[in-house]
Length: 262
Image (cartoon, rainbow, N blue to C red):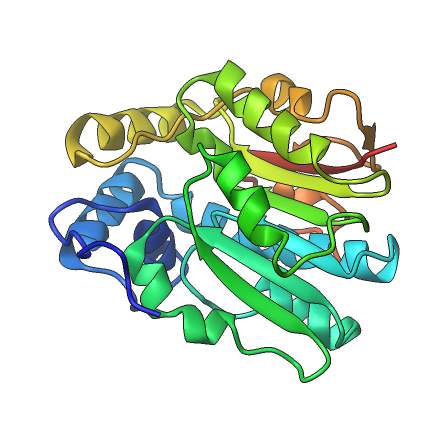
C-alpha cells in the first residue's frame, strides 16, 4: 500500500505527536516541537499519554475476556507502538479480527506493523477520516461481520472534532450500524486541569494543525447516551478497572468509559 497524499512534514499531526509523547521515533521535528510545547506548559502530558495507553490495553482485555468481543473497529489508531489493539486481542483470542482507521499517510506507511496478525485472525487498515463514518463502515464491512458484535474504539480522537454535536452524531452513526451486544469505548482529554487546557490552547493557536478540544467528563459521558455503561462508568483513565498493584499512578486530565449497546 502507498499513501494517497504526500506526507506533510511542515504541519504537526496528532498521531505523530502522540507517538512522540509515548517515546516513539515515528515523528518529525515539527511534531516534536509541538509535543515539547505542550509538555512545557503541562508537565503531566507524558503521564497522560502513557496512562491513556494503559486504559486501552485494559479495555481490549475486558472486551475480549469478559464481554466476548472478537471484532474491533479502532478509529484514530495512530502510529504502531507496543500492545496495539490487535496484539492485545489476539493474545487472548487468536481468531480476533481488527480494522484500524487513521487519516495520516505516515500511519499507512507503517501499516505492515498494524497488519501483522495471527494465522487464525485478520487485521486490516483503512485510510479514512473520523468525519466520514459511512466510508469507514463500508470499508470495515469488508473485514468485519457487522451482523456480529463489534468493539468500537474511539480513543483520544473525538476531541479532534471541534463541534460537540457533530462528534455525538459520528458516534451515533457508527453505533447505529453495529448490532446489539456491541461496545463503545471512548477516552478524551478533559477540561478540569487549567494547566492542561492552557497548554492545549497554546498548541491550538500556534501549531497550524487540527485543534484539539478538551471536554468535560459530563460531555464525554453523553457519547454513551442510550447505551449501558460498564462499571465504573466515565472516570479518569487511571480509575477505569486498574490492575491490582497499580493504583498509585499519576492523576491525569483524561476520562473515558465503556458501554454496551442493548
